[in-house]
Image 1 (cartoon, rainbow, N blue to C red):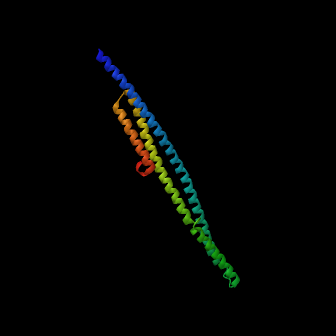
Image 2 (cartoon, rainbow, N blue to C red):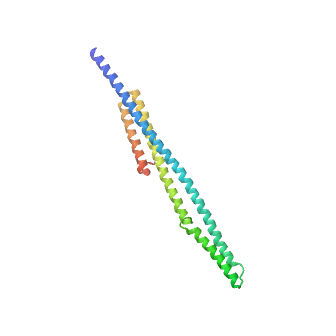
Image 3 (cartoon, rainbow, N blue to C red):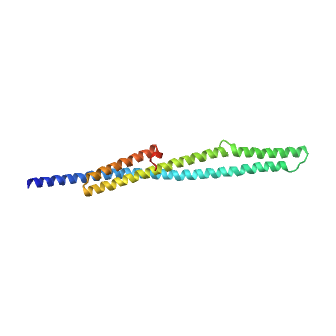
Length: 191
């Protein structure tokens, strides 16, 4: 009888200790989940912002292309009209054609605001958007693993299963690993 009471006391102590461990695991995983989800939201905001910036840059590129083509066409048009031999008119026509050609060149090659510079800027926004999207996927995967760990840790407290505690810890490690990869190498954890 004494052994039965002692065995029951050990079982109750182990159950309390198991509940405390499970509760601690849930708390730690929940804190990591909150951090991971916050990082995921930051990445999603960056995806949205860079998408807008890239679309804006490509719109500028298209506008420059239109203006460049119009300048080139106007230059050709000016040279096609009026085949006057008056040197003053010929000089004016050539000056106007040159101005349109210079405008077309500037629209294409201006180092700050030409089509070439705009396309470089747009591609940089697209690259940043792609990286942020991979980062967001990484954090989503990490959050899913941490959520599963929380569920398993909660279930282990109810069932007093050490196996569930181990799986909860494993999912926590997977979640943390995916979150760290999301910060450092997002392309590896974005699946």
